[in-house]
Length: 219
Length: 219
Image (cartoon, rainbow over all chains, first blue to last red):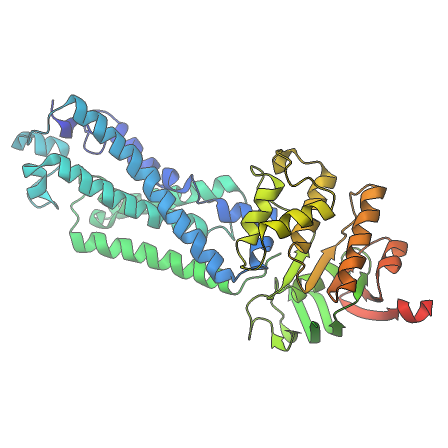
């Protein structure tokens, strides 16, 4: 067995891979995504808004949420890779193995995948961490409209899963965010599409947070 | 010397008129009492003065600078509006330290003094979640008075306090007023309000219907 078969990001033999990537938005939002909702609900935001600008408060929340989401996704993936690397060798997989995993010539980072699979895994840990940060901001941007902490944390997952189902069911699978995060690359995405998707998620969330924070009543 | 000037302030929330053509000038060295039934608009007026809600029309001008135009939040203000809210996993001292860090002018010594003045032990190792209702209220008041800001706004400050603690808080507020600070309080208890206040504004349905100068009456 190779490292690339054992790592959760490229494992195709069990359901762990699918489970992890469906639950990734929840993992990302869990540490800090619901914190703005809690601050609003308990009235703690009043303590902050009286001593500083709302915009600075929103920026601080955004940075904390992004970083905590990055690490909450990158650490388990990295730890899993570390353990797998202690048990299995970093051999380049056979061509048949690529196809089992789902990687074909037209996928991204194929050269890295062939030459050094561990580096391929690290590249995806970085990508997944960055997307997790952007996805967790969705939780912040929903804080003013959701009715519970649970909803604030879970709604981003529901939105991204529904979006993935819609895109993959309508021949736009290469725009499925959850699909493009999976290192198995079962949807064939180009790097420009990945960068565009990341920037769009980031922009929409930052815009909503900026608009709702700047001019809002703190009740 | 602090001055709050309110001119033609109006505010509606979800179609309901909350504040209607409020005009008043408040100066330092006095305690202003807001009197009125539940839902009369006392708390909303306090929120408007502290910059927590944005007026539909009219201005709140603090020391010559218009709120939400020249300044985004009051520069030297402490508030306790409705229930105190702090982070449950930290002690009172740690909670106040976190909030004091948002400004540059409140030292750890100021925080310890504020806690002692309201009757809390700064070295109490209990976390906020283990505080009694009265202790939570005292911590809220300590948060409002720490560093002795120029303007202090307290909504029902002696609610949930025993007689001795209430007496102590009243004494502290009068001392602070005598150091040329501007204090605004709302209180249901007419006697307490008249004891503390120099001027009382009566609010009904979002409008000021009466202004009573207690100092003149006493003379």
